[in-house]
Amino acid sequence: MDCARSAFFGGSLMVQSTGVVVLGIALSASLLASTARAHHGFGSFDLGTDIELTGVVTDMDFVNPHSWLYLTVTSEDGQVTNWRCEMRAATVLRRSGWSPEMFESGQRITITGSPDRDDPKSCYLGTVIFADGSSMNRYGQREKAAPALSPERELRLANGDLNITGDWAPEQLVMTDPRGQAGTLVPLSTAATFEPGEVPEGARPMPGTRTSPESQIAGLPPATGAPAVAPSAPAPAQVQPTEAGKVAASGFDMWSTDNPRMRCETTSILFDWTFDGPVNRITQGGDTITLQYGQLGFTRTIHMNKLEHPPNIEPSRAGHSIGRWEDDVLIVDTVGFAPGVLSAPIMHGERLHVVERFSFDPQKVAITRTYTAEDPEYFVGPFTGSDTIYVADLPYAPDACDELTFVDYSQEGQARAAAEAAARARGAAGAAAAPPAEAPAAPARPWWKFWD
Image 1 (cartoon, rainbow, N blue to C red):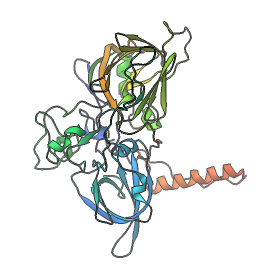
Image 2: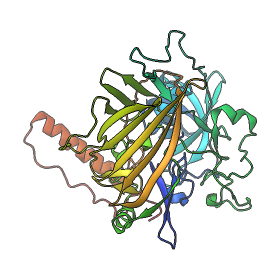
Image 3: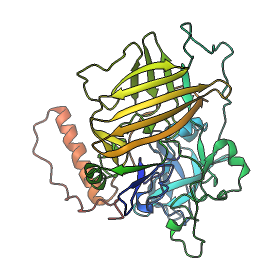
Image 4: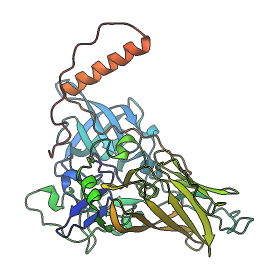
């Protein structure tokens, strides 16, 4: 999935008059939310405007949840300006054959894309053209590995359990517009069947793209219909919130450290298993099965030799999991959660109880997980969904996470950053110096909260 600038990193929320929260889990843009709160949406980029930059690469941050390319651009009058352009997450870039080596410092490139609405020196990278004339679109596949089972792989382990050990990943989702400025998300395997920017019948464009109603581009037809594909994240669900759930959801700030992904932390055991196309690793041991999530350094241990959870569990985001095989289905029961975010803005407390069922299809070589989550403190009834992973096209190698989206490039922000850097340097050196000059006060509204 794409990680565009104004990342929502969670679900979208609409509260109907009945009090039912309709949760449309994020794709690369929130399917039901407003543009301003679109997940990986396009809210802070003006996709209705084209820009072109030709400059010299100075650096690259190849990280999750957004990669950034930095370059200097020299105008005709000789003025040099520093630009940064947002790219997709390192996880999906790697799976598409992209690498930092493609962007060596000093090489000259041309970027076409869209400008940022707030930061005059940031852009959304749609296409990059290299000095040799070759080019890559945002959703382009530089090379596509063909996943295949090793002939040595056995269907079952020595103890008779299904062999699900290995590296697994969901199918990638890409925009029908390879530049990522129009259209909607479709599975990579079907992308070639659509015209650039096409929206499948009965589907709707991603919010904020050129043909979406949120784009506010005059003269374009309105978009209607449902999302084109099921998200690579927890499936949409109708959740009846309790009073505590309503309060928690209404007070949740998606753009702050309320949001775990803004802290480079996993949202929940449900959300991040397939979100943003990670390559996950499953390892079956004697008494345990380990699930290593491909993003954000998250690991779960499933205890296969226990019938009950221990009485005193130290609460954590992973919780405590016990598992068993039943008719070749791995059933995992998890409790002992620390309060947190189930799928933003839906919260959960320590009473959260999750049951997952992992089924292996040897013909498709796929693992489908169905799940049910219950928490009487925050919502009434079950939160349910499913997802599917396949043999990975790359080995498990979680990329570093560094949330660089909301860097304040205003004069005030740069002054604060310089003062903080100077203070850190003095502290590291152990110098007893006079306190730094007071930096300008932070603006009442952060520059990137353009909707407030």
